[in-house]
Figure 1 (tube, protein in one colour):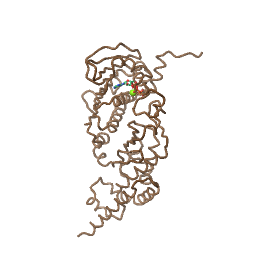
Figure 2 (cartoon, rainbow, N blue to C red):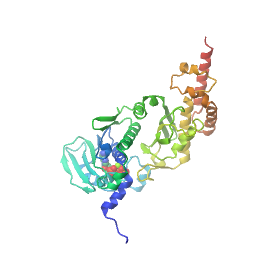
Figure 3 (cartoon, helix red, strand yellow):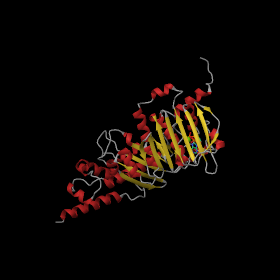
Figure 4 (cartoon, rainbow, N blue to C red):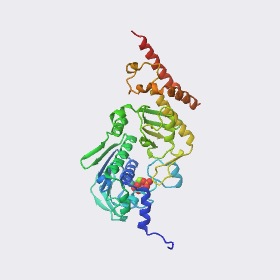
Length: 399
Ligand SMILES: Nc1ncnc2c1ncn2[C@@H]1O[C@H](COP(=O)(O)OP(=O)(O)OP(=O)(O)O)[C@@H](O)[C@H]1O
Ligand SMILES: [Mg+2]
């Protein structure tokens, strides 16, 4: 076959394949756009597990009517002007590809209104064909409606999993974003069934309960650590609470869900010797760092990032997680089990006390070695544990 340039529709469907793999990827792009627009409330409605309908409504800044057509063009973005911007990106979007991609493989309708505009505007795109902008009445913000995803790419449709799996992927995605943005109100519904509704009051543990159940959420340990421009917050599971795979380890880096990150390894190292072989922790961790320290432009779906100084970030995450673990890990055998209930009403991981005794000691030693000159008070967990121990001994002696 001779070399030829592909027709634009095929080229754009190929490009769309990198951005839109399944309904959950559409939800991700639309939610990220809403967050970039400064939305305080994001409503997500799906039909047919996202195959027939995905509608994301936000109360963000809106798109000016005269820019609507541009918004659905490829490489059209308001978030980036120069190549240098790529290395100080503070928004989730930057490629100007999402809406164009979604529009080329679905029936897309965007309705938007800015606060300074008396009316809203609506634009439809069907299989990449861009319609005309019409004036409509609309509240301030944007509603993006995606119908019949992949209707014109039947091969892609065949790759979709069962409804229950696609729905679960959307649920997991929205819940994780809700956790990462606890000040934003999220609602996810399919028909009359609301699967997630958050208050937007900043309470992450309540959202954690929606993700893992109340019991697990109650047991999760809170991480809050900062060091020279790096900040890690979120939750990790105590050593007694594990999973058989790494799927429940979630990292957000500067508000972006990054799925394939060396930081997972850093976290696992923090648990080193504390978990049985083949067991993994649950974690939802949020790392904040200067945007220029992280390259977000390394993966077509933005699922990976690269750090300028990976070792520093790696060791920070490992130490922060380890410190949290040690602060909450019960003191080994020396303490009679029945005293734990009286000195510490935190979740009961104590029944594994005897199993983790040598590991605790080892881990504690390691953590002291691993944080040379970090400038942080690494003696805190040890001190807490010691205080606890002293308390227990006191209780033991009392009549
Ligand atoms: N919900 C929204 N509210 C306000 N503006 C929006 C919204 N969604 C899209 N836009 C505007 O449309 C533009 C194109 O959106 P699109 O998602 O295609 O690209 P992007 O977000 O800039 O980059 P990326 O492809 O990385 O997501 C955005 O840059 C933004 O200006
Ligand atoms: Mg976008």
